[in-house]
Length: 156
Ligand SMILES: [Zn+2]
Image (cartoon, rainbow, N blue to C red; front, side, top):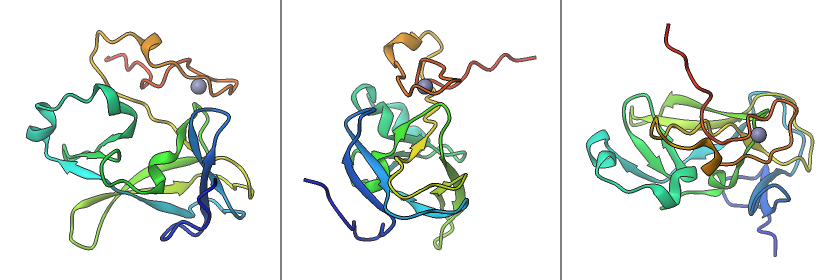
């Protein structure tokens, strides 16, 4: 049963995805820069996030540059259903909300046609000793990294 016309997100619907579980799909053509939605969820300060055990909900987490973590598994909206792809058509962009706090704007980064599934690159950051195979990616893109983890950054 698809959830059509999600309140606050008139441009997307959430339904079964062939990639993983539920996915978010464009209901109309979306030009680059289109707002998909603001990523919401429970907010944790850097201190609070430190004491949490995130194992079961890693893929719903967004870390912001101010140290805040947003957990979309709690109080999140439809944007939490965007699946990961290594060649995404959307991105998460930080901006300052009305109250001055950082918010995450999910927006299109290229022209998206009606019916396309929406993806972002999760680029998960986990323990340095985590096994990338524990977070497998099956997005099928040519440049697939094979994992949801962030690309390894080699420090100079
Ligand atoms: Zn991939």
